Length: 178
Length: 178
DNA sequence: ATTGAAGCGGACACTTTGTCCGTTTGCAAC
DNA sequence: GTTGCAAACGGACAAAGTGTCCGCTTCAAT
Image 1 (tube, each protein chain N blue to C red):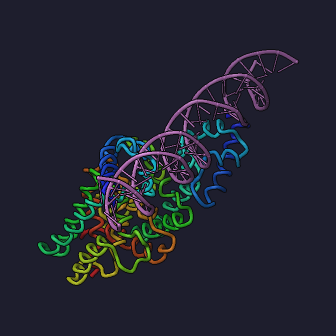
Image 2 (cartoon, each protein chain N blue to C red):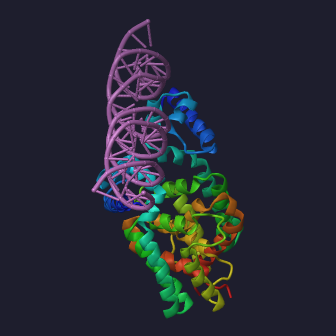
Image 3 (cartoon, helix red, strand yellow):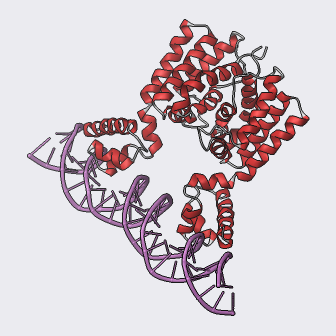
């Protein structure tokens, strides 16, 4: 990759980060302008809006992967999953787009045998829980992400009232039937 | 309402019903064209796309309301809720937009004290379950709809594998902790 | 220093949304 | 039946965005 290319890529991401925090939709033309690059350059780096957004949240996703590992070492499986979900929710509250990004990132290629990093990390959490007998054995990472989609639809003003309870319900549902 | 107005409204809905079944996004201009009305007429009847979609699914929503009542009479609360969710899922599988519509319809006015029909119907289901001691007492209709959002994100090809299990998980989460 | 491939930018074509306004039409009063 | 007019109509048009194309520039390998 040429040096100017990677410089531009960074500029675009930085611009997008700024603009996505602001109100309203993320306009691609505005991103290009803010980044000081042409439309063409933007589209060369990120073919679709989703690609750009996914790249934007790559950091958060890496963090979620690391967090999964860390929690797994330090807590019992159920507590680990609970905390991991809380972390996911915390991101979702502030960065409204993470869930999309997580969903996209974890199953970029629907049929890919090799799961992505995030899929693996979350999978490890679930496997540990299943092994310990505290979680259902038939749920997979995508199940959990799908169920987490509700986070993207909770309105900011109802967040504090609802989300803790909803996470509780979700977790209860995932527990081993036993 | 003038007779031509209601005729046009019906034509627009019919056109939208046809076009939404087809592939791709629902283009408002295409709806107007198909309905044989001008853009202006379309916008007069439905200010936003959401409004149009909500109207489109009004029938399904009424059906869901009726179904809630019927199930409540004929089954135990838990079974009633289970079946109701299955019905919701069935709609969601075929009519990809219902969840949005349900979400919109049930909480059109976020702060409205009077819940909408759907909110009431689902609320009755939950109340009955709580009274019987089989459901958590702290969940409300919106909680359930929020948790159902995953339905809108399940891909058609994974539907049969995942949805039954996910509904099971959801229901398990809603059961009384007892 | 040369050179050509990679990268650039921004004009432009295209798509879709939403508004405006002159014209038409339903219908109620006479 | 005629008339009056508010309501409704429709389609041109403005606005907003997206995605493409292509002549020019820049990097970096030689």
